[in-house]
Structure formats: C-alpha cells, structure tokens
Length: 129
Image (cartoon, helix red, strand yellow):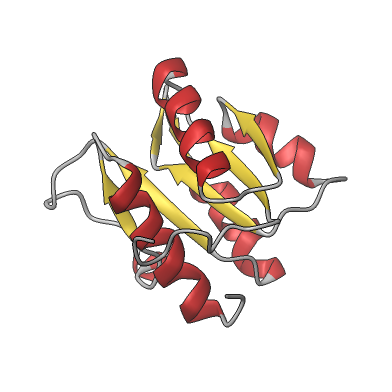
C-alpha cells in the first residue's frame, strides 16, 4: 500500500472544485482512499451553505474558483478544527495567506499518490489519522 492510502477510510469529505473533470477525478481518488462520502461543490457559497447544516471530516479545496477563492470555506474549517488540503493550478509563486500556511498544497494536475500524501500529512498533523 502506498503511504497515505486508506487515510480517508470512513471519512466524509468536502470537495470544492469548479472544474467538472477534476472534481470527478478527485471524487474517484477520494473513494479509492476510502472516503465514505464526498460532498462536491463548485463555489464557496454553495459549500458554505452546506456547511451551515452539514459536517465533514476533511476538506479538499481548490484555491482559485471562478471569480473567487475557497478561503472563506477554509476559514470555517479552521474554526471547526477540520483539516483540509488546498489544490491549485498556480505555480509555487502564488502566495497563500499566512493563516493557511500549515495546509498541505497539491499542485494540479495531481494524481493519486500526490493526493494520498497530502491527505495523509493533513490528517497526521491534525491528529485525526
């Protein structure tokens, strides 16, 4: 088993990704990592509306969404003590606000190993693994 695989076993995952193909691929990868449920949204507003009544164990958040960012979702996850991973198509020169400096970042395009590693590091750091 590749390190990190299975870390998402039984977890409910919030996925915020505005590109359909990437969202579908990521959902499949999370399922392969053992996620019990993936709630997928294309905007921060939709994810925040779901979070108002819903709960998750882990977030996978695309930083740049059409016309906005996922930072408001990340702020709610931090408030709730829920670990998350950022994904981005931007290079390493894209500055992430300091309040999110501890979140693992996966660069697009990413595969199973990169996502598994980031999820594993995220959960290990939060003590939820």
